[in-house]
Image (cartoon, rainbow, N blue to C red; front, side, top):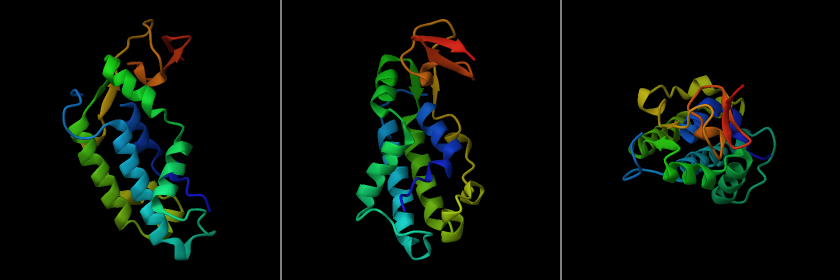
Length: 163
């Protein structure tokens, strides 16, 4: 079974990726996502005995690589936007939150893991709600949706546009 647990952490992962202090300490978005992917995959291997199907991965690293590819997150573009000042990023909080998620996954029952029970994670920390934010106003130039500051706005034809 391919472990595509993106839906398990959809809300949390979205805030980790698309949501600031400048990046001086802590984790980049790519490092944050990798930490979460490794935790997801470690739990998959720990729970493999109760998996609905056999795992398709030989190693945790292979699983994490596949999971990251499956999230659709363009980490290079996100990090370029942070560097360009279109997205803020709380790197120190990201490290804390990635570890919090990894710990919660480690404590999640195998049943809740395979049933993608996000509520069972119990990760509720205000530091993890605002790791980053788009800084581009509607009508201004953007490169990715995450650049846009307004909730519900997307980067359409390189301009932040409300839906």
